Image (spheres, rainbow, N blue to C red):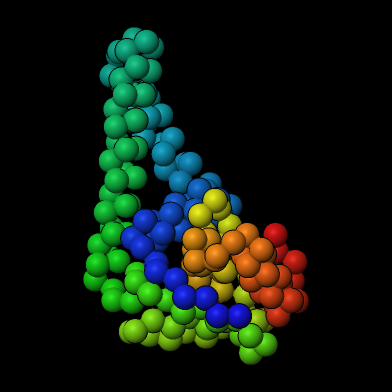
Length: 166
C-alpha cells in the first residue's frame, strides 16, 4: 500500500508533543520538569521568610510563566529544526509491503524492516510508526480518503510486522 501525504510543521510539532506527553519515559521527565519550577519557587520564597500564601501564589504564578516559556522554547527549537533540515516537512511517499516500511521525500529515502518496528500509536490527527523509542514515521490521517482506507493501512502494518498495535 502506498500513501502520498503532505507533512506540515504542525504535524511535526504534534508528533513531538505526542512523544513528550504520551511516551512513558518522556512523560515522566516532562511532568517532573514542569512541576519542579513552581515547587522550587515556593520553597525558595518560604525559605526567604515569606508567608505560605505568598509563597504558594508567587510560586504558582512564576512557575506557570516559566513552564509556558519552557514549552515555547521546546516548540521554537522544534520549528527551527524543521526549517534547517530539508525533507522533514513536505511531500512524503509512505509505502508498506512485505519487505518493510519505506518513507521517501525529494531529499531522502528511508527503509525499516518489519522486525525493526516497535509500535504503532495514534492521536486524533496522525499515526506514528515507531522504529525506536523516540523516532517514528508520521502518517497523517488526512492523507487517507476515508476511515476504511486508514484501517486497511493499520491492518497491513500489523500483518507485516506480525504484531497487534491498536
